[in-house]
Image 1 (tube, rainbow, N blue to C red):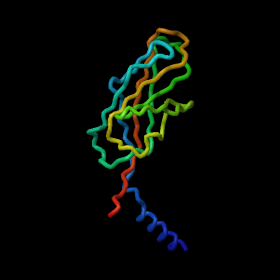
Image 2 (tube, rainbow, N blue to C red):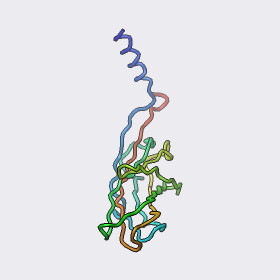
Image 3 (cartoon, helix red, strand yellow):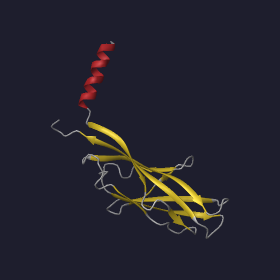
Length: 153
């Protein structure tokens, strides 16, 4: 029985359409710190250019995460309503799903698109305890991808 299940598993593995999968931590945006001073205002924009990155040309996205650190000029600055917007090189705008526990947000709205492209990120904060003080996010872009087998493989 175990041998029979092993054979079925191997056949399923052979017929799988995914050749490889992985993740790419694209690092900090350029510039590294995205700054905002007032509630409901756009931050400065951060960019990643992955168009020439060493990924397989057929790598397609299966998920995206943005991880970040935040800091302020005031040690007791409080905020709520942090919203991240990610744009691809066609300027498609997606609101990321913000994880309330931890400092990351994610989306699957770019799934199926090529990973090798240019990306832009900016954010807004709904409310600050102290308006007008320096508040910055240092984001990192993480792209999950897969490479599908060609039909003739």
